[in-house]
Amino acid sequence: SWDGQVLASGHYGKWNSPDPFERFSYVWVLPDNMEILAYNTNEKGQWRQRGNTLAWSGKNVNDLTFRIKYRVTSQPSLALDLSKLEKTQNAGELTRITLDSGSLFPSGSHRFTPAGESLLTTLADKLSQRDSDRIIVEGHTDNQPLKPYLQDTYPSNWELSAARATIVVRWLAEHGVNPEILEARAYGEQRPVADNETAQGRAKNRRIEILVGDKDVGAGEPEPAAAAQTSGAAKTTQPEVTRKPGKTAAPPEKPERSKPTGFTRGG
Image (cartoon, rainbow, N blue to C red; front, side):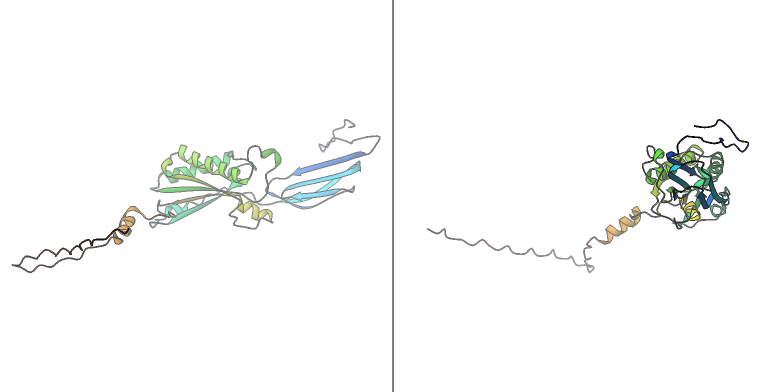
């Protein structure tokens, strides 16, 4: 039972019970920009950590005190480097723009943050002014499994990366980019760019990549003109006949057909 006291620190006083609790569990979920350094408690129990989620459970305990040490890492940068788009592209080249998912979405969601909407609006304005033939939006995640309460919406990281890529595509289309040149791809956790064993590495892997370029880049089939040349090269050409002036070329002789031979039916 709770003693009903709310301390100045915001803690809810003490839990009083005539008997020790049979089983007790605590779970902490820290933001992505916090790194867990150390943790302990004054009672025996079992600690478990997965990424930025920390859990403790124990039996027959009371009057618990927890100490968790963490540090705040740098906030995700919302700066958008558009210098690459200002350069003249050669035909067949792709310009790659990488956006931190922490800048665009809350953790475990495909809904934009206000800062993410502002960033993508700026990007859409630049892309709509560019004479591009192809824009590919790729969704990437880290390798951490989604929390159970999210799995009804996103059964796996595939679905989360797909939802994020498609909503970016839709935002760009609704803000002036030609929808006919937009394409969404989902890679989930399959293409990491950093080590998933560290918080910093997982943050780098959670990203949206936007590739701007020409339609023929990455295509597995030749262009129509090239295909025609290829098929033309396979045709058999007839030798030319040179005629001397004043003479008429005689028509080629027809080969003689062999006459059928008779046969005798036996019996």
